[in-house]
Amino acid sequence: MHVARRWSFVLPLSLLFACNAAPVTRDTPSPAPVAADAGKHEAKADAKKQKQKELRQKQRELAAAKVEQQVAELDRTVRQLGVTAALAKSAAELAHAQQELDTFLKDVRPRELAEKKLSLDQSTYRAEHSKDELGELTAMYEADEFARQTKELVLKRGRRDLEVAERSLAIARQEMAHFETFEVPQRERELRQKVADAELEAKKAESDAEKARLEAGLATQKASERLADLAEEITELEAALAKETP
Image (tube, rainbow, N blue to C red; front, side, top):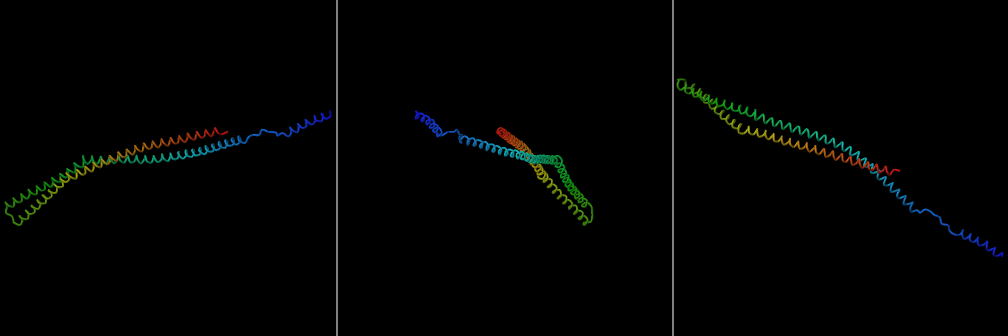
């Protein structure tokens, strides 16, 4: 009976030792999810930095684009001033050339032709008068008895006067023909060519002015669209960064 009691005390103690000797397992967190979360946070931080960098770059581009637009506007203004001046100059030159041609045709040519005709008539009349005077002298000296030496001297002067008058008349006729057939037509052609050149320059100036106007409008449109695009991109980046801010 004593033996049975002894074993009854031994068994619980052995069970206790067995329980104490068994390994105890504890629930510890795995390192894999922690590393994944850290990677996600780092990726988000990098993406945010990249967006901030892109935002700063777009802001600088927008500021530079505004300055470039102002410079381009000044360039277009200077060009427009030059084009306007060239257009005004060509128009003035055309008006002057046309006025010269009209004045020549209406006033200068008729007056100069009349002057040449008058000079020719004077030469003709002088030649005729000299011829008539020589004839009268010849008839007078032939009818009267004068000293032979005086007669020859007077007739000699008369013949010389007639010769000079006839030579002057021939030159006047040549000058008149040259003036009518060469000088006047040439001057008219030159004036008409001057008008044609002025008209061409005026058309070129008008084309340049229209081209400058179209180019200025296109450049302004492109600059405005670029500014609008940059502003929109900046707004989108700012909105994206605002959403990511905790």
